[in-house]
Length: 485
Image (cartoon, rainbow, N blue to C red; front, side, top):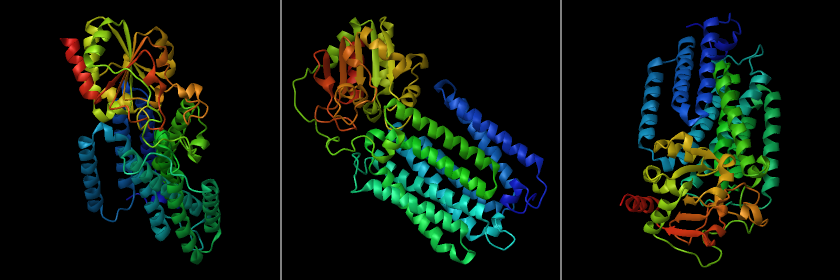
């Protein structure tokens, strides 16, 4: 072996720095950067995933080769078991369950950071963290405490996000009395404990790190439960950022360059994505963390429309007839499409319409679905051409010239209350101007429900709107039969 401890292997404390180790970690970091670049576009996402896999393989192999390993066979078996579990989950998981799967994986990253931090605290000599006096140096204590705290927040916050996304917990905000005071007080206490832990003598650190860990787990729950379901895409992105910073902090503790680079990349990209999504919702990031959509008492509904008003209901034959007459159709998919797994039927409908000379485009809102890019992933799975998919700012002006706005399973992202009703919990969020289209088809299961933000939608009752009340997949399949007939 080339080094006596993880910290020594990367930092070279007491030993000469091995240039090949530094080079290997640098190459791995380059592959991680290429992975992020590839994942920025659906067209290059597969290549980006491959780059990420190669980079991680280089980092793992380098770490195993250059560090003292207690039992390489046990580690190999653990990697094999984890890989098999990952492959099995990836093959079996439905696309509708992808958001909660991502949240679940984030919780594992956070828990791993906590466990590594505690392992370093309990066995500092094995990690090369002891100073000349036989204690853990203050800088390593701070890095360790931050890694544990961020990891614990990531774990417990991701558990709540998983529960909300999977329906095990109601999506409406759960508001605690004086929640802001409690949250700020808890965060301040964590920072104080971190400072005390860094300055404490070796024999007095255990109560401090235990208290810090427990409070970090608690604040993770407290930060996420007040956030409404409509903010879940931002939450998933935010937790992704947290997991990256936790990994980076542990990288400093272990003296592992690859972990620092990877964690910083994930943390920074997640933070940037969260900021972009908050801008897309016209929300302040801190405001989302503090409460999110529906945080006011009257903001969230209980799953029922607030009032019954007259609306027009149509059939698949009606929709097919009018779609045939259209020159331009814009499709707005939402989470309802994901639940019904209607993306393949929708792609077939697109093909049938284009065969008859109809121009079809897809409009994707930044927060459609339950995680960033949810709709893009579903459409890519159905082999919808990338050049037909447009973001809100690129296509919103075209609704005034389109013949049909075809809404399938979306609600909040087309709700005009965001533009006109200052009392609405989604007021200020940019939405699609479907009310400007000549004809609107709106597919949803029934009139009894509302969107994830819990508010009714005036689009249901517009003169040019025809409600198609049915399972999204079945309705689109019936439309396809009528188009093909």
